[in-house]
Length: 99
Image 1 (cartoon, rainbow, N blue to C red):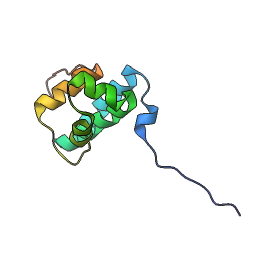
Image 2: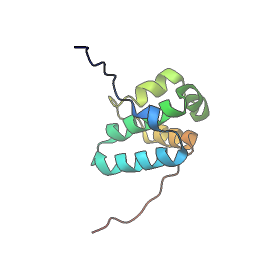
Image 3: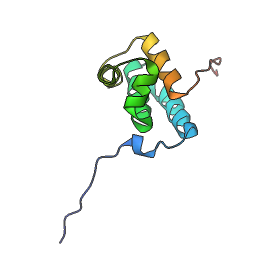
């Protein structure tokens, strides 16, 4: 009997279009329940899908600092989040809570 070989799932491999990236981030906002590091990790997934080097360049950050900020182990500053979102070509929108 042969062994089944598995690989680790990487969401970045499946985020191909800006629409998919925005939908993924929107879903992560809903799941995060206030966990900023969860959102930072989601932004890291999207940045890896687009190419971390280019995103870092567009955000005006070093690649290493971008990896650290979006690792999910830290909570980056809001200014960093805004730079990354701009570099990713994503817009943030505000809406009232649905009650």
